[in-house]
Image 1: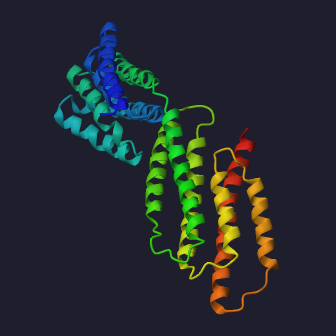
Image 2 (image 1 turned 135 degrees about the horizontal axis):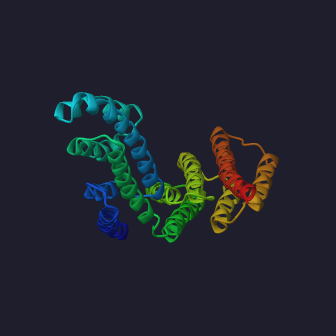
Image 3 (image 1 turned 90 degrees about the horizontal axis):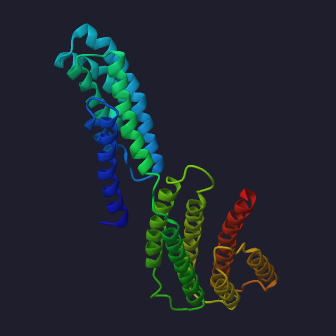
Length: 322
């Protein structure tokens, strides 16, 4: 079990007991139901917990209206309960509130047990729901700070991309690339999946303020990963290492050396434009093979420009938000 699982277990126990004690102290009937509602309200994130609680309040209102109409007419017995369930379940499914079905149906059985849908009984059930859901929401306000975990995943992704760029700088200048594989991209995509999971968890545990930075960062690096996969495909298709390849290899190496979260890459973009101009001024290729390899290098150069522009645009959006 992870630390969050132990924390959730503590919340389950303390929250359920607290909800029962509060309901008992308030003189409510069926007080233990509040503990069950707390148990079912606590979710993995703050936003999910509140969303579930709101759904249950809405479905409670629907269930109570149905009960107040059907039970006095049909009687407080099992067949009447079935009559209530039909429109109740239909509403739950139509409103995509299936999570609310079980706990609110339990509250419905209290009307049958008490043989009453009078106002005092309705208030009793409402306060059971209010206390149970309220305790769950309050307890889930206490969540461990995931910032350190996010930064760890973020650094892992960045270090992997640096490693990929360094390998590209080496292999683009080689004639023999038989041992150059793309397994590193599988590893990188796994790291990006971990970062996505943690960034979504972080977002859903914040109600106010800008909390999507790490998710946007993950998306930016994922887009760069797609570009690097294209560059890798072009590198392994090169049949020779033209003389122009050294300048491109040096540039890729420089990109790796200056690769960090805070770099707006403006200087690198200036460098790549200079390299591009230098390519256009060089003598035209004399053979078909030289032409194809030079074209491949130019395509890699254009992809590296897109790779940097993705980071530049990300840095620009951050400045706009600030």
